[in-house]
Length: 305
Image (tube, rainbow, N blue to C red; front, top):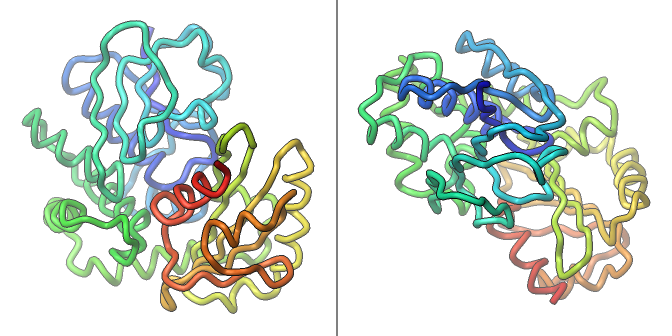
């Protein structure tokens, strides 16, 4: 029976493209694998898959008894149902090592870079496997998405180098133009349900025994979100009421390079502890904050201790 290659809950472009690329790489190395996802692609991911002629992975929500390769996560909070009886054979990721454990040795590639796509590009090189043009284009887009077109503090020289090499394989002449085209699609909110917007890029974290949800919407201009801000605030209050201590939603302006954070919390003082800025009402502006992984989660983890 084939093993599933699967990314985190509420999959973003990196999570879905990484599953497709890793499944291709593992298959070419002789492993029996199939790409999977914990949800349908976001509009940005749909744009990327269509542009490069790729098919979205099958959606699965229960992995009980299955063999798995994890991409873009290693935290149980972001895993599908049935993980307690699944067998993890490998991990490819760019986040901190989470709490997934294994009963036997595994192949793990966990690098401090801006995107899982960067790790995968290097894996193709390491194993001497040819990278298909379509997958190269999608990996390129995943890196541009995760590093916010190189503006995020998570971006490294390795990410830029990978993009340069992937652009050649994919035949992309203007990387920046492609990035902006992609972020315009990502910025579109008209007609979207509030829950879809909140969960477009959302993760739950265990912070010192408290369940904390952090979502992020990245747009080319914050004014795009003005008409839906009240609806987003109501939606995160609803999400918090489902047994969470806090829910925070980052509204990231990629041109201004900062984020407005919407707040619903049992203890709003954690925001001041984390960022040294007192929240006025239910939101706070955080200049220079672009990365949930590097600038938000670690700050809140310290504040909750």
